Length: 126
Image (tube, rainbow, N blue to C red; front, side):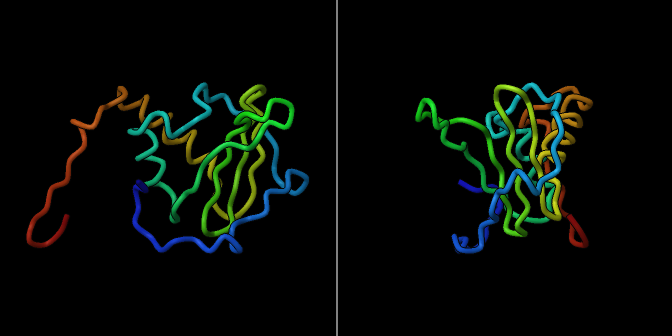
């Protein structure tokens, strides 16, 4: 279930992930599947202007899920190697940086669970 509603994506509009045209760096995040921590993943979703798709690449040697990838409807994307922590990132929204920032913020807030989140609604605002 997506955390943000939206129209179904047109697969012809998904970004082409070309590592040769992407910025490359190493991530120090120890959790390379960001959707495994739903609270931090929720914070990621709040910090980016577009819906995020995610999954794994196919490991050609083993035929099993390999590196993590994220894509967005603004044609941003990133891939992260589960073995080396290498990040390839391209497009207008730095998706992996958003993941790292959300995890950092979650840790700074003493790793709150769902019970620490709330919404206050008044007549004038929310």
